[in-house]
Amino acid sequence: MAKMMYREAVVSTIAEEMERDDSVVVLGEDVVGGMGTAGGPEAIGGIWSTSTGLYGKFGADRVIDTPISESAIVGAAAGLALSGKRPVAELMFADFIGVCLDQIWNQIAKFRYMFGGKSRCPAVIRMAYGGGFNAAAQHSQSPHQILTGIPGLKVVMPSTPADVKGLLRQAIRDDDPVIFLEHKALYAVSGEVPDDPEFIIPFGHARLSRAGQDVTIVSSGLLLGFCETVADKLAEEGIGCDVIDLRTTSPLDEEVILDSVEVTGRIVVVDEAPPRCGLAADINALVAAKAFASLKAPPQAVTPPHTPIPFARELENAYLPSAERIEAAVRKVLDWR
Image (cartoon, rainbow, N blue to C red):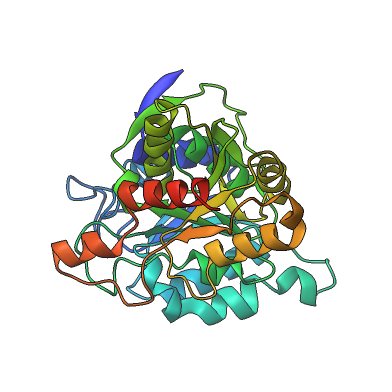
């Protein structure tokens, strides 16, 4: 296995798929380095360095710098996908989905359904999400609950470089539109990645990253690492936690969650989105409806409060879920009487 950073897994997977399939194209703001540049030293591959080197390998016809217009980027991706291409479109920040939500919600997500299955829209829309960088309320959000709630979209949230590799390859080859969410704080995280050029992780298959008999913890993305830290700490006290990495929120692997809760009888869902109408509430409702007889304590959620994300470092730290809050929630369900 090779060891690489999360962002390197993004770049290498896109490059491999572009080499394998001429229909794969990349578009977005500064994916080359700036409109009109020739791919020189300033062409770092976007602000997250997730398209570095692609322009030099594949040229301007397949790596396209766009205007600063998310509606244009996603609209172009929709047209490319309907025309037989496999576009990988990049939005710098997930917060900007509001600008192009019509293209995502009313167009891309509905093409196959409205045309009776006679069309396909194999578009991948990549976007960076999440807090922790003091980027304030308009550049720090986790809008996956909005996107997960749109029928017709597949929503992916990889937690490791290996999952980036397997899930992004699946996303590019998938015939349906895929929202691929990359947490900003994970880009520099390193991990082992399989060398197999056909390594693919099917959507809807969650990963059990820790195993235990006492509590089920469900999460994804950056917060999964916090959950693993808590599970490892509690294991030293003889408390066993199933830690489930969702990988995809749509499709959702209901089976692995329910099977775990049937054993542990307790669940804590950890999510970076606000609590109202959120993913944590949805999963806990699922468990209450389908595994109620197994529950030994009320389902718990660890989320931010229902407020915009603050700018100040101290306030943002208080806003985001932490290992301490996760541990407190786990101990709460264990102590329930």
